[in-house]
Length: 247
Ligand code: ADP
Ligand code: MG
Ligand code: MG
Image (cartoon, rainbow, N blue to C red; front, side, top):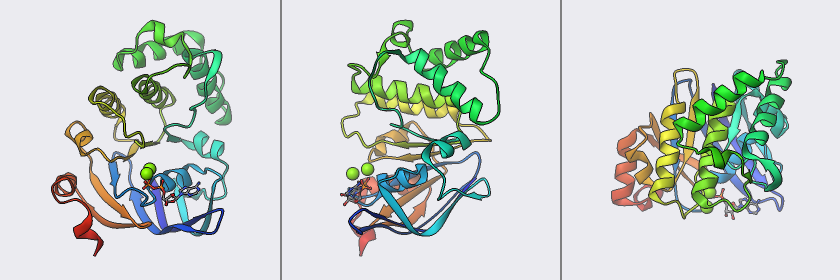
């Protein structure tokens, strides 16, 4: 599904952040990237999603057989790449539900599909919100307005479930995630994952892996993936930190 070869990327001032990342993600897999602060984890997720703050200077990002490096962020989204925090804006007067309907229909349109019939949309919203324990009054609130950390997280996972991307990238940058928010993420990922899609989770939280069983755990340090293992690697990292890998 996703193959990243020798990916190098820099920020505006010319500082190289990604220094040759290699990563392959197949359908049905859940990958976790861990690593020291400032390693380039968020940069990697931004570069995959196509955020314009970064310039790719070498390498390729192949998604379903096509190099997407030149694609605009919205084109990547329409092709089925979802990045959490894609829609962090507050939109007074636009409800969670209405925003979601518009985003879903926009994606369908970009893929040559008609709007989802209203009845089907309602059923889908009901199904996904029930899976996540989202209450009706939440769905009619203004998007992101006054949302707590946990509510933002719930909305983000709800968006993932509704848009049903091929590849979901969750960058858990927020250092303030409490155990309930971690559960929201974990329950969402477990409900979402299937043999046809893939999930890339970037996290500091070894605890998250008590609830999600990843197929691969990677360590990103200094702009490169320096080690790959299974869930036991995460346990080892929790016990030993990163220093033993950095020499
Ligand atoms: P991580 O997510 O692993 O903590 P980041 O990808 O956020 O690391 O950052 C890697 C390095 O790149 C850091 O030194 C950070 O300050 C720098 N960096 C990332 N994005 C930008 C940006 N848009 N402008 C300036 N510096 C950035
Ligand atoms: Mg960071
Ligand atoms: Mg980060």
